Image 1: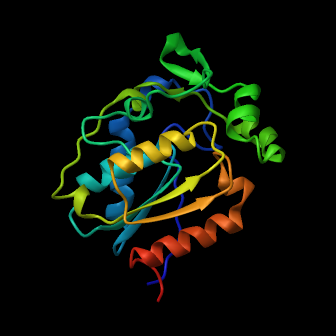
Image 2 (image 1 turned 90 degrees about the vertical axis):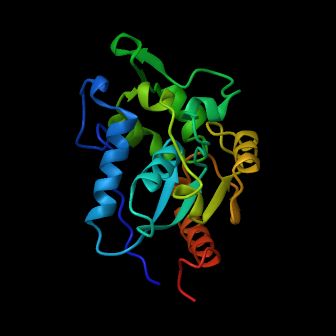
Length: 219
């Protein structure tokens, strides 16, 4: 197998977005967007879900035709069970609030302290960019439960990349979720929540190893 990585932005996210009403963001909208990207591909895909993206990846896999998603990899991703939301999967979750309520409490905005202390503590050179590009995250996608089945999502092999110094999806939370929803392959990075910034080369190697172990990568 060979892979052409694609990293589309979820609705309401990305560097070109700013000031949009988060009420337009929803878990259903996220899922529909990912399903559309999968269906536009000419062959099977592997979904890599980071943080909240883990929930979206799981739910999108449930929606598409069996065989379109041949592997799931969670990078410190939220591994929710059927009927759970991101927040339910993480309980008990954070030692401090992850953001400041905005838009009448329908969204959270990350402060520089949040970004520095929790998200980018091991890659501080990325904080200025994060502050510039950060957008408010709607609460609804974090609280919306997803539905999964053994016959669709449950048939897709899963791997988990633990981020051992994560202060957002903590190591305890990662281990707890994997115990409840076992995966077929594992790897660890000595990183915080954003290994794509703090350890991009090591993350790439770990993903390649996990894909190989799931039989989704080159021999």
